Length: 305
Image (cartoon, rainbow, N blue to C red; front, side, top):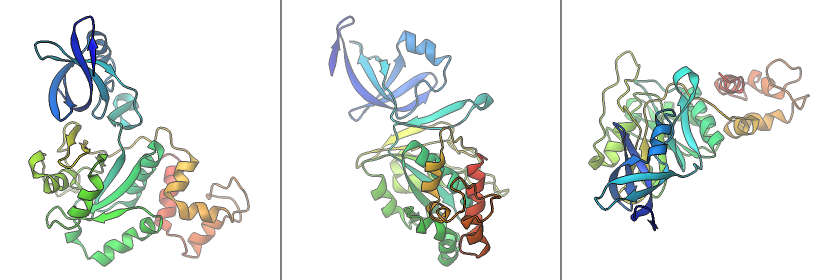
């Protein structure tokens, strides 16, 4: 804590937890304070929509009458983003420790290629990914395990959960404690329902998925929720299209370690596993030793699609 000499106001550091109607909510040692941006920052905010986002660490001054003013936005360790207007990067949240990738068994159906996209995004950002498969009460667990086998063999932490029955909620709660976590996933998979089942006091609004299997956007804006036992949870709008802003081959190899291991047997060191002769990866697919769906997902991400 410091004293701002010009205005004699006290300054302290906090975390942005919500942005609504031009004001910024900041958590200061467990107390929520509604703040405005200092003049210069406010003018920048009108030009840059991602100037301040949930998860940002900020320096706040409190004037004698109790008004909160954001004086400085600290540099970000990382950011979670998606394509925005004219495909410009739109940052959703910052300074996240882990990404909780939520998929559903049905309504909408499980899409492993979408999970792979989220995994690559997490690796690109240097975040720990955790997969939560929701609505497991709607399918036989043996079928679900078969879907997840390639992901489990790659070492991805997976929680089978159901917001309706409570399955897996205790395990998920332990993973969230003490961390800044972002929930990410297709609209309608039940991100908000899981959060409400874990933390009823947060009162996150939910909405049923349409029968057309197209998730409705229930969450209208990102928000960072302080958790009872420590840590924060970022609930973000449903993300259908992800931007892989800085993904490279090393990130891709971490998401598909089984393909990286096979690549050592290719004739050419720079093999793309698409058309080259004596490709060990394609040979493994042909011998049914490599899941064709994983291979197709790898190629889509490799080609930036």
